[in-house]
Image (tube, rainbow, N blue to C red; front, side, top):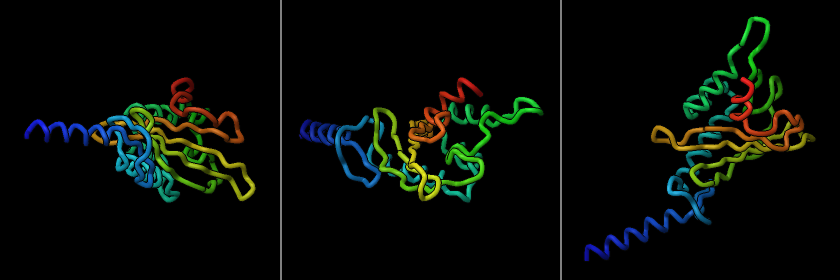
Length: 171
């Protein structure tokens, strides 16, 4: 009887590992052993918190980021000299210094191997071209943490691509 219970438990675990997640909790496709629908919902919730306009990026983002990403952000926020500003001189959540774009959607989150990606669609003004930011989460210190933000479709070509890669090269 014990063997049957263990085999049954193994099938249950395998079924969970073969499920993919959407932020709404629906089970679809295949997922890594590190993510499930609850993890995806958690990452979506963190992303919504990050986009709260009443909280500054330097307050909220490091709290939910990997040690590596926090280090890159800190390098980007440092003023290299009294005569030049920091490399990361704008609110990278919104890709702006002054205006705040509309957040059109957050999610659904999707697992992608050992990471969870949360897409955010933004737009400057009612006639602006929508662009996408994908918040990339990895497990660290017992939780899901932001490790990169990848932008695509932004009108300013220099804003597109991986923020982590950009900071590694330039900050």
